[in-house]
Image (cartoon, rainbow, N blue to C red):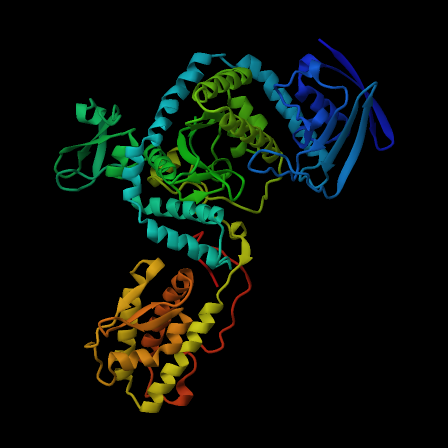
Amino acid sequence: MVARKLLVHHNDSQFDVDYDTDDGIQVLKFQLFSLTSILPDEQKLIGEKNIPIIEDSDLNSVSDSLRLITISGEDEEEDGEERESSITDAKQITIQGENDKVVVESSSSFAKSDEELARMLQAEEEALFYQQFQTRDNREEFEGKLRPYVRQVLMYEDPVRQEAARKTVPVDELEEKALVSLAKEGNFKPSKVEQDHAFLLQLLIWFKKFFRWVNAPPCDGCASDTANCGMGAPYPSELQFGGSRVELYRCKSCSRVTRFPRYNDPLKLVETRKGRCGEWANCFTLYSRAFGYDSRLILDFTDHVWTECYSHHLGRWMHLDPCEAIYDNPLLYEKGWNKKLSYVIAFAKDGVHDVTKRYTRNWPEVLSRRDITTESVVSAVLLNITKECRKSITSRELSRLEDRDRNEAETLEMDLHSQVDASISLPGRQSGAKEWRIARSELGSDSYSHSSCPVRTCVDEHVSRIYNAFYPMFSQFVHEGYSNVDILAVLSVVKRFLLDLSKTSYKDRRRSIDPDSNTSKLSVHEIMSSVGELLTALFLKTELETDGKMSICLAGEPVKTSIALPVALDILDDIMANLKNCGKLTKDSLTLPLLKLNRISSGLILASGEELPFGIVS
């Protein structure tokens, strides 16, 4: 034990601080917090030569000269070296001992008031105190719940399983949707990090349509509804893929019994494409690993499972729930589903972590429900398993992971004390039968509140350009005196060309034109010459092929055509529907509702009820 004495100067006051180095850094930080109201998670101790002092540091050997700086707003390079950051509205406190000098800097923009924080910290302290008398101190039970998942996540590293998953994904289509989602916000030249982030969100939305939720499987014989009639012994073919639990369902029509094995092997789930939250999260985590994302399987002890992926775009771990197709909304369960959380544990190939604090804003109440064992035992078990997972990795990789672990721990503490926007209501559970959700008290509200939808830039100048491009075509129709029937025939040909083009790969769109596809008035070549401005608006052009045929192909960046083609097809449908209700066209009739000239492009919009991330309301 080494006793240290510090003299703390804060504004016009000074305080004497005595502390024991055996108590660790956190005790010192809480002492400083009690005097200065600067949160422990905003403090970072720096020793001589700018060496950070962390939980594992030997305080007895630390130099007498220390600095304590904020962690708010700090960023880190990929190699782990710190960069200096500017701190706005910062306050500085000087702390001096006999040979000690500590500087405390803290951002004043923290959301919660000192009074709220004091109440929360007091509640946390009381919850930890009472936990000593409530917990069963059952280390074996807690560790026993974790071990199967430690083995489970190793399946995601199998190249055979990853390749099987990749083969089922329409990669080209998801890449295009990812680029379009970025382009619709004005980002036509995204970085690889931005593309990877957008692709992951598209993968999540695609998976929601690919996988199927099972309440009660349809009858294998007549496809009628079934009702649960108990459990059955697994067949060897089911055990081969981890189907040790088999539910039995009796048909309500023919009385045939249908088996529903709860497979644990994600390779089998890629084939069956069905299950409940366990199968959904298990399979989606494989998919995210198959595309190279650092991924975790998240186990909620109150009976739910989901995924986390590390987003380099956000610089942090991101919550993804494949059952709901919801991402980056960790308070969904506590605030939307009304879940009474206890333990939320993250499993990856390189470690196991307690991430409960990400998913709650009522930590003292959650602590009161964590009654399997003490918090110190929880930390020790997770640390031991993580060390096992990392025993064969290189020292450089180990250093990178430890840096990321520290950053995550700091972020979790900061998130825990952040203010929650009470105006935003999160939805209750959407997956599963309504009666089942009601029985679990997870129904909540039906949807997001309008206030939960972000205000953001929406780029759609291309829409005005496409609308305006139809005017020259219709001017030619009027000039030539075509009937509405002839015009509809021409527009049908144009629509067919664009539809066929939209079904080709976005990277190298090309579609040959059949010269025999004539209308009653114009040949295909004449039609193509009349739609020149429209093709330009779609970033397309015509080319002569070596055999003399004409083709339509890309004339610019592929994503610009991707974002424009659906607009042109929608406008064509609108025009063709209106044309059927119009009389013979004249120059004066080339206005609304036939054509929408001089359309106003949008700026900032409040988007609500859209299908994020690629749905746009304008």
